[in-house]
Length: 97
Image 1 (cartoon, rainbow, N blue to C red):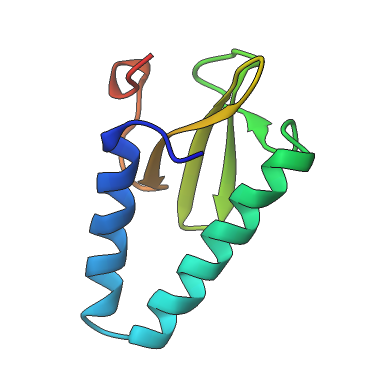
Image 2 (image 1 turned 60 degrees about the vertical axis):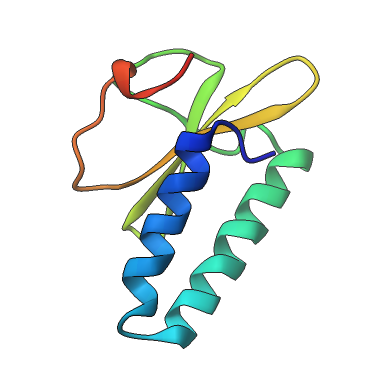
């Protein structure tokens, strides 16, 4: 379900940063990411449409008010496009779609 290398790299960057200060927080965040992403299998439209993209098939989940998991609903799968801190700038060119 985790899509392009960009999404995997972003997760690793986030977890590396958090683990420097608090390994328990890292483990909790991993669990929350996994739980929310796994819920997409059953409820793919549970995330909101990304406002600047206005595309029904590209949505986002907000995790702990800090992280955006941006994903695309395809016919037969859900693909995680990227994960961003909410303070990071984001536009369509950041996505590999």
